[in-house]
Length: 428
Image 1 (cartoon, rainbow, N blue to C red):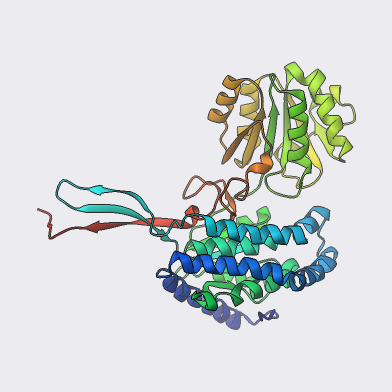
Image 2 (spheres, rainbow, N blue to C red):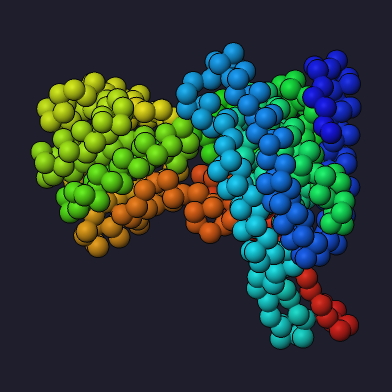
């Protein structure tokens, strides 16, 4: 059982963190020779254990949820923190989906024979040790562990203090299945202290940790990006847009916008901004606004929006840039598609942006010109998710352009090396 340790003196905390990282490095080295079938056995066993020990996990989560108001968590944050039987089953199913995916380790991505007879292969290999820092959502403990182990990486998990009981229980269940499947017991570790300084100590261990992945609020992610001595895979926020084109089907538009905003407003792929073509603003905007307000959404609109929806509050420039993570949405009427694209590229976060249109040329122009990790046509922004896109699970969504972009699954947790084989060739 992983005990939760109190805050430690600086020297002891540094030793604790270096020991975690050193054990993760040794586990990562051992994982390089673990076969795919052994990793898949662990994924299946871990999935079964999550289900058979669900009562234990849900009881631990209930302790965290009960304490959440004391940490100042709002309703959306408490929703992210909460595990239900359905969410736990989804996490277990995610592990089974990862088990069914091809192993990217050892995959020959390119290859051929040179004129001099050398065989040159570009082969997938693990990154090594991943330090995963995250807030609130304990189900991502499962996703991260599954993806890292399947891709041959050791992972150090550091959840927020608000989810410590949930994460400890989940880690206990996942780690218990490692030795029986022939995997190193330190392949999945949980930082056993809630001391925030532990994050800083681990971020300084670039000699042992290969990649840091922060998943949470913007302040956390900026701290990690600032302090890390290893590469960071990240996105800062999710100001996602839905643009209703002049050729938008009204029924489809209403359905997509309501789902994108309301289905789960406290997550990064929920829509935060609505743009409406002026040609349909008189008819479509009041209808969509009424549907959103019926779900409890507060609208903050431009002057043209408020002419059509007088109940909307005036929008500031900051509102158009904000990731609300709540039932609040900015709204703007735009003269044409080009103006919508300019607005998205200026105000968006390069995460997920959608267009609703029956005009194929408009859809093509939108997907070509919007600069985002995912561009969606006639569907909800909520589909920018590793599970929904067939990755089995994701460890996060990256808005960077190097080394990975969009939902990051197995392949994004690997790199490659060149394997060159000859029969005595020398370079002249």
